[in-house]
Length: 341
Image (cartoon, rainbow, N blue to C red; front, side, top):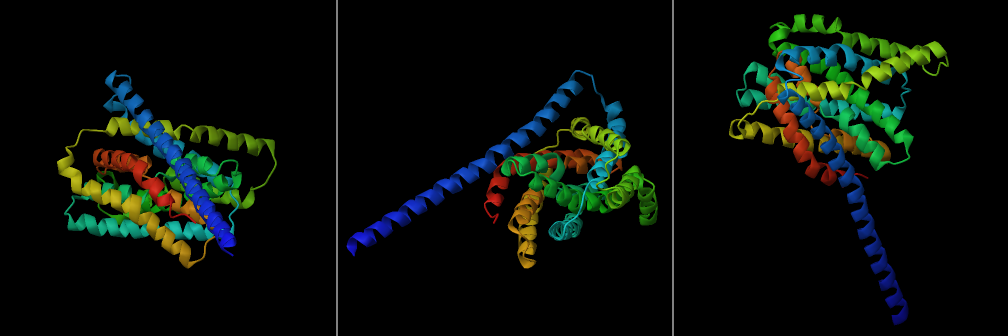
C-alpha cells in the first residue's frame, strides 16, 4: 500500500510539473509573437518618422494619406474581406459579443470624457481610441502565430474582426469622428448623410452583397477583381503608419497621463474581460472565445487615429494614445491570454 501511494504521489508530481512546463511554453508562445508584432508596427512608424525627418514625406501630405486610408485602402480591405466570408452561428455570436463590448466602451469613454471636461475634438479622439482595437493590423498576425497551421482560426479571426470591429468602426466610429470633428459639422444628421455617401459605406454594402450573391463562385473575372482589391488592401498598413508618423507630435506626458492611463485600462484590460464574461454567458466554443479574447485585448487601432485626424478630431492626441497602448500591450496581452479557455 505505501508503495502504491508513493507511485501515485510521483505520478501526480510529474503531472503537475508537466502542466507547469506546458503553461510556461504556452506563455512563451503567446508572448514572443506579441512582442514581434508590436515591434513590427512600431518599426514601421519609426521608418516613416525617418522619412519625415529627411523631408521625403512632409505635413503637406497629411490630408492625402488620410484620404488614401479612408477612401482607397480601407474600402478595398472591407470589400475584399466581406466578399469571401460565409458566416456561421458561432462566428455571429462572437461578432455579437465583440459589438456589444465595442458599444459599451463607446458609451463608457463618452461618459468619462465628459467627466474630464474634454473639449469636443479630444472627446471624439478618446472615444475612438478607447473603443476600437488593432484587431486587423496586429490581431491577424498574432492569431496565425498562436494557432499555427490552423487556417480556420485565421478565417474566424477575420470574420470576427471585420464584422465585430469593422462594421461598428466603419459605421459608428466614422459617425463619431464626423460628429465630434470639425469636418463633420455640428449636426448628427449631416454626419449620417456624409457617411452614407462615403466610400467606406459603399464598400460595406458591396461586400455584403458580394458575400450573399457571389460567395463560392468560380469565375476568372471575379477572381481577378478580388485579387485587385486584396492587393490594394495590403497598402493599408503602410498608409496608416505614414499617417501616424505625420500626426505624431511630442505631448508632455503630464498633460495626458490620466487620459493615457484610462485608455490603457479601458482598451487593454476591461474590454477583453467584458468579452470573456459575455462569451461565458452564451457558452461560446473555446476557440472562438480564445480568438475573441485576443482581438479585444489588442492595443488601440492605428486606423482610429487616422479616422480622428481625417474627420477633424484631435489626431495628434489619438496617435500618442495609440502608441502608448501598443507599448503597454506587450505586458497586458500575454497576461490576458492566460485567461483563455
